[in-house]
Each structure stands twice: as structure tokens, then as C-alpha cells.
Image (cartoon, rainbow, N blue to C red; front, top):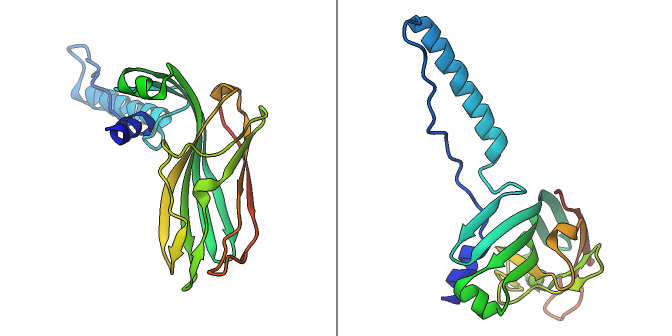
Length: 215
């Protein structure tokens, strides 16, 4: 039940919706004029929908409401980059700042009415045939507001750190802000420890990622 609540609260994907409004032409206009007007209206609606929804996901400033509460997306940076260390290639596809007003069972469980957090979406691939270890779900986040945080293990979609050959994994880290509002965080730094071999020896360098959050 708890996992369902977290999933409902933390997924920020909105389906792009078309407009139900249709323009009416005055009676007496020629069919040619009607066709031209309808074409122009359709083009404007398409442009408007593209600007509003972009890739169909929640835009900064939008609020998603569900059984867990109301969740305002205050910042969002997509396609942060691809980072390599030894046989590991890691993509960070998204970093979001979210301000939530909780309700129901989620508010009871968290023992809070509000929650401010940073979300980091990660995909990891190992190119090695050997068994290696890399723990992106233990990455440290440092904010420009002076907080140093570890991922919340209950909320996060954990990425298992054991890579048994050439495998791909993905997950999401959630960092709960303790002394800041998500809207106050303009920049974050993520620090990932290097991958290691079966003897726990480093086979790459630590990865540091700097991200400016777009508000």
C-alpha cells in the first residue's frame, strides 16, 4: 500500500490533452472560408498544445493532484548528460524540484503536511563482462542552499549496485530537503563513488555532476 501511495505521489507525467472547444463560423460564409478558418484554428490549437505540453510531461509551475496530495513542480532540468567511469555509463535524464502538500495516508505515514524534495532520474549501463559494483542510489546531493543529503531509501526507486556482466538498470533518487524550499534550490551537485571490481578496487573515477535547475 505504501509503495502505491509513493508511486501515485511521485510520478509527474501528464497526458497531452487536445481542446474540446470548437469555433463556430457565422452562417452565410462560404465553404471555402469555413475550411480556411478551421485550418487556421487547428494550426493554432496544435501550436498551443505543443507549447503547453511540449513532451507531454508536467511543466514547471503545474500542480499534479492525487490521493497523496497536491504536488507543484517548481523546477525541472531535462537531459542533464551522460557520464562515464570505467565500464560504467550513466545517463541522468531529469532533475526536478517539487513542493508537495500531503494528505490522507501519505501525510499520516510521513508525519508531515508538506514535503520539499529533489528528484533525480538515472539510467546506468555496464559494458564489462565482469561482475562490478556501482551504487548510484547512494549518491550524495549538495544544494546551493547549504544542504548535503542522501537519497531517501523509502521513497527512492532503488538501483541495485551489483552489475553481473553487461546489464542496464534505472531508478529514481528522491532527496528530501530539510532546511530549504524546493523553489529556493537553483543549483545542485551530485557525487557518485567510482565503480569497483570483485576485489573492491576502484576501476574508474568518482563522478561529480553539476546541475542548474530551470525554474
